[in-house]
Image 1 (cartoon, rainbow, N blue to C red):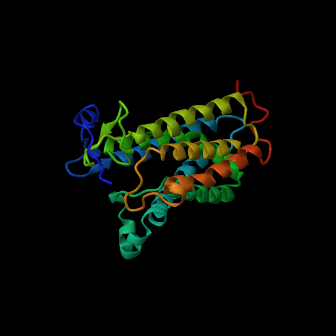
Image 2 (tube, rainbow, N blue to C red; image 1 turned 120 degrees about the vertical axis):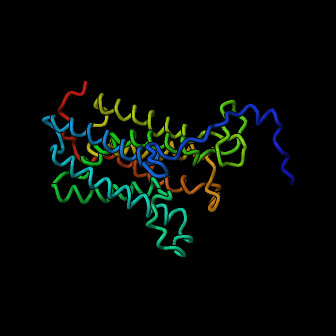
Length: 281
């Protein structure tokens, strides 16, 4: 079947996104890229918020332990995100070019891999610092939407991970693409995974609705998994992978166990939270 070209007026109605500098801070051919800046800003803002919480009599961590937490998170995000991309999205290439695994500056990070890496890092820190694992993960989950929001904005600025072809009024033509109008799926994810999920978690914490330890972690896992699953319906699949079993993308398949684990934690809080007796109003 021959695919008919889109009418000229369909293309003209789309918003053409300008090409931004790949560097947020440019020193003349090298510098700090937008995605790296999003990582740094998200981590620092999150740690700042968690340090403020250490002043509470019900705090899970000390101020010094939040500094240790930053180190654990950095290792978990970088190693987990990179290895996750290697194994989930481009295994054949990296088996043939193993040294390319180290070329992180060329891009290629997986959120689901970073999540596994962070989980292992938090488990290690919890053991070494005698902190309840889920109490620690609850705190990290609370501030994670900040980093997700900034990360998806950087994807949008870079013109990467865009959506499928569409004729919606806000369709955009991204630089270095095929010139067809597409869903700005990065902005959808920024709104759902960042703003909406962050507000939902803050409201639940503030109202004291999820008092059992682990339920904030469960809300994050389910909320992110659901948001990612839905956005993948309009996000362009990776060209070298395409759609897999049942017409699902790799992102959707990886999000399913997240949602199941999230639902389990939401239903079965493992023990009363240390914040249970505090007043969140």
